[in-house]
Length: 304
Ligand code: RIB
Ligand code: CA
Image 1 (cartoon, rainbow, N blue to C red):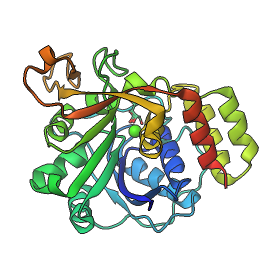
Image 2 (image 1 turned 180 degrees about the horizontal axis):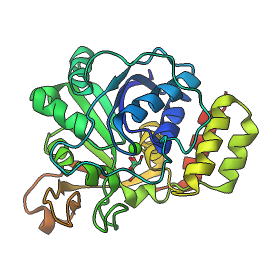
Image 3 (image 1 turned 135 degrees about the vertical axis):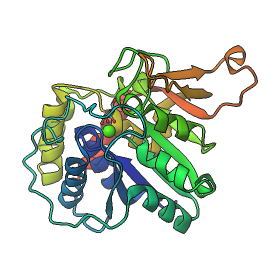
């Protein structure tokens, strides 16, 4: 079976970087054709810098990197994550990038690339602002997107940014609502499952033992990011694309709270017939992962 061509929308961020290395380590199965960047863990400029640093580390200067939204559509700006260090890569020693930033705004490029591909798979592991803007600019976009795999939300568990909301959806609740209302088939890997995909001491030792520059950087990220947040949130989204069989899911209707109050960004997941109340499910909600299988998948992708 040929590799799945996909666009990666992200906010690296250490776990986004690990997700990139996981995907790039499996060219047999995944073909990352473009990276679009959104402000999230850190500001837009360091996000765009980090995406290029990781692509250059992996020898993939051929993959274009597009800059996107510097903040949410309507929500208050300024929310950043404290988990990724001031540079966004947990104090990485990677050199500044030399590859250029590609021309074009991410929102426009998502639409252009989807139309060129005919049916594009998108993986999104940051605030969904770029995807929402693309949908607003190009209302016909859903016809050209086969599926969106999202790291975000907390369907049946507490949030990590507020008691009710996960970071990506808390940063831009309106964008999340626009994406979940788009009609595009969505798989959501929220904190429900990503909190099971944790960094282990064995994973760190195994990564360090590989000895390549990619594996060394991955080990650095696992140690330094993992010491603050041991959950490999974004790599779980890539793992879903690689091996859905190691996960368990439920189907439901997901709505996002866009109030400006304490529930902003909350996921309201309806699974039972009574809760659905006649609405069709709009989301595959991932709830469980085989953590050992996930760890093996991750480590194997780091090997040359
Ligand atoms: O809540 C975790 C998510 O928020 C991850 O995508 C992390 O990179 C941050 O963007
Ligand atoms: Ca992220």
